[in-house]
Image (cartoon, rainbow, N blue to C red; front, top):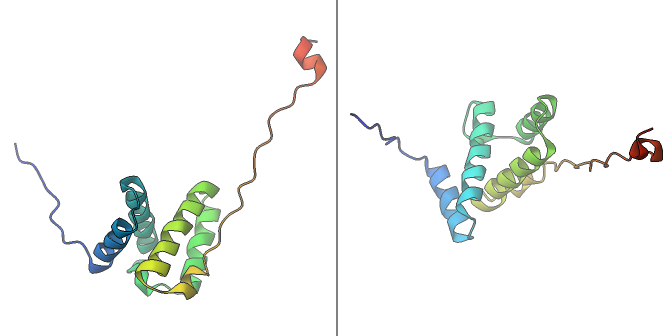
Length: 119
């Protein structure tokens, strides 16, 4: 039985981001999520995320909304990308281009007296 181990080198950008997250005490789950979100941006761009422009980030966020990505996922992506651009890349100008999505709370269904009494 042969076991395949991924020995592909980690990019210097990813390594730096992982070190930044570790030094700031981000948990393993958060680190994994942040890397996943950055990879999605890179896939969307077709190039490394450190080459993104404000317009690229705008198009990425617009695509997320148009694709029906949930607000909580969009906001998690914004957190990851803000970390990348603020902390790892020191590009606050790009970080400011990212927009948090307002999460509209769902109201509970209110039953009428008739519904409760079975009429």
